[in-house]
Length: 237
Image 1: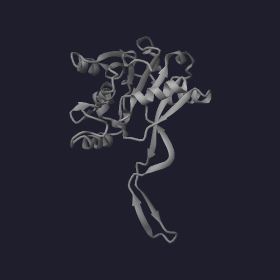
Image 2: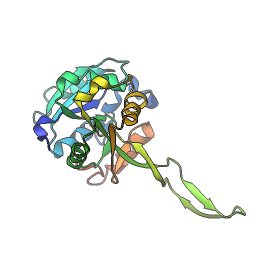
Image 3: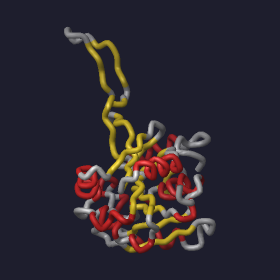
Image 4: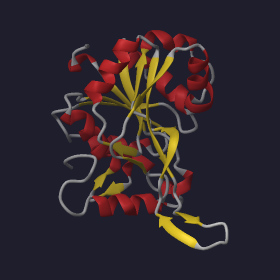
């Protein structure tokens, strides 16, 4: 397996985060606070705790906030901040970082936290010898469900259940730089990943532990609550 010193992590930090408007007018979504620290820092610590301390932040919208925040902070990390454009799509942001990563690299979204075993993810990717690996987590309904008899009598409620046999993209990618020249489209989710899958070059690493993304201000509040008492489920903060 490649040395952790050789692996950089590209973090997508440049989107406008329209679903958390109006907060996104003032700062990029990865800078939204969770228990007094930007969610981005919680995410970077997930990688750093497992030995991966070299980061490339693909900035865009309100990039100056990233530059200001990281100046002089975290000297134990190697942090590069690249301006990848305010309107750039996800795949093109990663492409813009190509000269700043090695032959194999991590990439992830700037708004999702999970207790992913990154070394196991990397081993899985290397063993499959594909061009990319995406971490998948079971789909959890955002709504509670109820079960009832044919006559309408309710038997039980199930609050936000996991939907069996349905998996979603949780980020926490591993990519081969050699495959980037064959990427199709500007968007990672609708272009690059489906096309890689169609060629049999994309694998999925199944993660059964904690994962949560910050899509809305409600998600931010839930993350705050998760981290209030002791160690949060994504690891020591």
